[in-house]
Image (tube, rainbow, N blue to C red):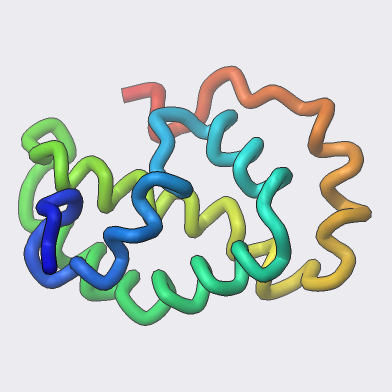
Length: 114
């Protein structure tokens, strides 16, 4: 059952919206650092299978014309980008890598410069 949080066809990702959709890169980083490995892996596995379809869908119109549901889908994918390294490369070592990252603040990301 859809709650219209994401565009049609992406309903299976809607339960991730509350926990993974953020307006800025710093909040996405903080979520990565405070999430458990199980949370990161579950999110990663769910989104990776929909990423290509989602990017193809979003690429059909300019970013400035995105509806709220399309913005949420893009923000979900941006969160995916933040955790992909943690899941695919760092794995069990993510907590060690996160120690220094906790002291970083992202003040502006390319996605926020527009």
